[in-house]
Image 1 (cartoon, helix red, strand yellow):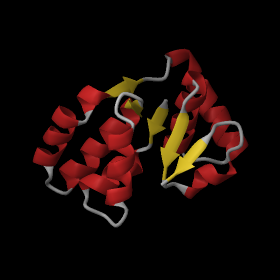
Image 2: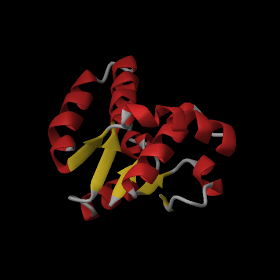
Image 3: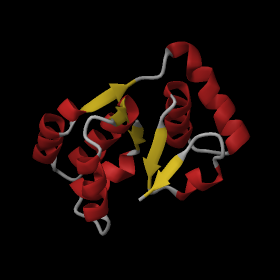
Length: 125
């Protein structure tokens, strides 16, 4: 089971260089994909900022039915702060890390900040 980071989806949605690798990964892992509520909101914020509301709508219609949406239980939010302090991650990475650890998921990302994480498995695209 995989926790797909925001940047993997945005690579495709914004038609960037590694979009083919990201698409292939998603297509090959349907049924094993998870996304955080934070990532979903971040994708919406970015696409709306670029006037790509229709792309967001298609994303929600096409991707979300095959992807489980995860939330961090409220009592674990203090752990995000601890992760920030210990691992020196920004909020979004600390949140992704916390959810991956809580649910026992492998993080799929292009974010080099995860290279220094040793207790959560990471797959770099």
